[in-house]
Length: 311
Image (cartoon, rainbow, N blue to C red; front, side, top):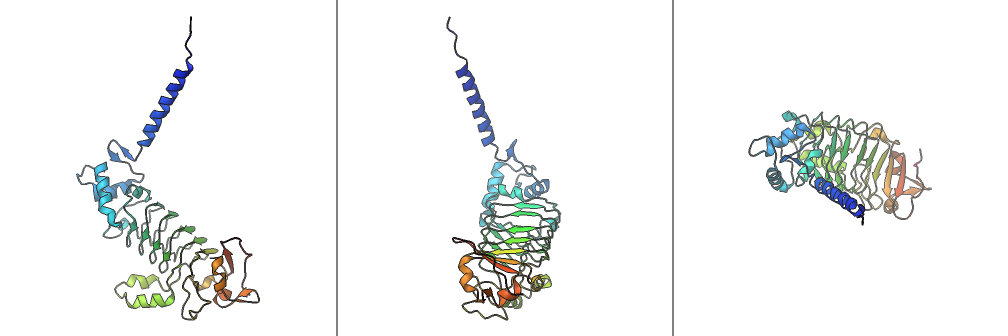
């Protein structure tokens, strides 16, 4: 009597099971029983109040698609701060379901004390004061952001590190008052407002008293524990204020931090900027000598040793 080998049947069963599991996981797109599932119930409450067109407390696929179509202009449209409207949102991660929201608008999450994390891969721009006063915001991740507005993260006192790998422009006092920040990484930034820009803006913005009420200078940060500022873009940055002329040796930013951080912060620049720093007997002089604790140059083929100003 010939006995059939059960092994092919077993393999076929395992293959069928794995296929079913794969198909099930592939369909896990955030919808359950026809409704979009949210991590944060307060964000769900906000989204339903904004996009639930049939008022059944459920955002179905059609409504989500419609919301994405509505937001193609790329702006989170809120009349004022969401949290000041009574939403105690802890995370913004749910906004990833709305990929056409590419901009966090003016004051959108201002004074949102409940907000703790914001990981948004779709955002390209953060407007002025967007997260001002979010004192419990401790984790941020915006890998696509190109521009950060004035005071966007001012007074975010729980932030310890800042990393915007693709940001190119940063506004006035973007991290001013974020007093626990130890490191700021802005490796592609080439534009930070200088003092002249600030005074010109102040004269043209008399209806925006809030800017001048806490932005008393153009400083990027005043964190008393800040140790490192990374501005390693190969693109030359502007460098001018009331005391420095805009000559060939001044193509990188001067003094983006509050003055009482002098000799505390290490500045990291791209090696291509080295020729724009003036040296005397092997050490930088002028603004580089009087302000920074040390200067390092990174990129290209090798990392030169740390360069320390004279004391």
